[in-house]
Length: 120
Figure 1 (cartoon, helix red, strand yellow):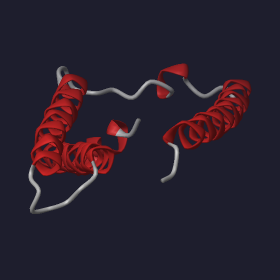
Figure 2 (cartoon, rainbow, N blue to C red):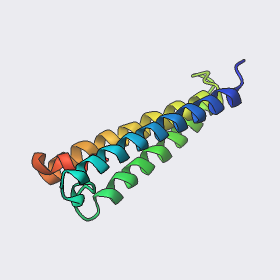
Figure 3 (spheres, rainbow, N blue to C red):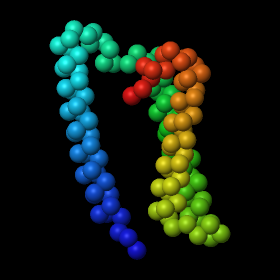
Figure 4 (tube, rainbow, N blue to C red):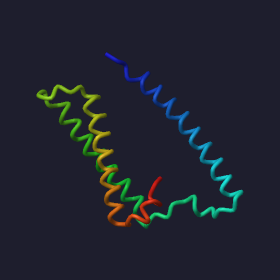
């Protein structure tokens, strides 16, 4: 059986490296834009009031549903899921589903023209 600790450590290290590279590139892009005289307000997306809360609320509801369904799958012998696999798969599935639902809700609420500013 595969130990989970080395996999998590590698994922954290890889994620940290990718994040640092991304932030460095983003900083260079912003500095170049400032040198060209582009307005700094272009850096912060103009979200409608409550849109950020809506996104995180739907995400957390999806994660909570994933935890509940993961517990149900782990406890039911008919499915024969390992406890870790049941929890992680359901959390990611329902968390991702929550974000997809938010995308379509934001598209409908704010329209196509402002949807470009909703990207994080």
